[in-house]
Amino acid sequence: MKLNKLIHDLRLAVKVLLNFGRQHHATLSMMQGMYVRQALHNELITGVDTMLTIKPYGSLYQVTRTDYITNIPECEETWLATYGWHSNGHLIEIGGDRFCIFDAAAKSMYLETLTEQGQTTIELFIKNL
Image (cartoon, rainbow, N blue to C red; front, side, top):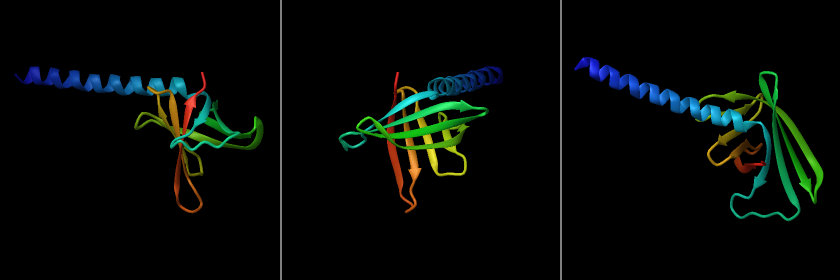
C-alpha cells in the first residue's frame, strides 16, 4: 500500500514539474521581440502609440520603451532587467521599479510601474507577431 501511495505522489510531483517547465519555456520563447501597447480601460489617446522591445543582453534583458506621437518617436527609455522564474516568469528592472509580467497563453505582457507619487500603473502590451 505504501508503495502505491509513493508512486502516486511521485507521479503528481512529476506532473507539477512538467507543467512548471512548460510554462517557463512558453514565457522564455515569447519574451523576446516587440510589443504594442493596448488600452486597458477603453482609454484611447489619438495619435499616441507605445512600443516595447525586449532583447537579450548577456545574461540579462534590455527593455526599450518608445512612445510615438503621430508615428514620430517622441520619448525612449531603456533599462536592464533580470528574469524571475517564479509565477510564470517575469522581468524585474535592475535598480528600478518596473516589472514585465508575461501571459504566454494570451501572448501579452503587463508592464507594472511604481510612480514617484507611490502609485502603481499597469499597462497591457500585446506581442507584435
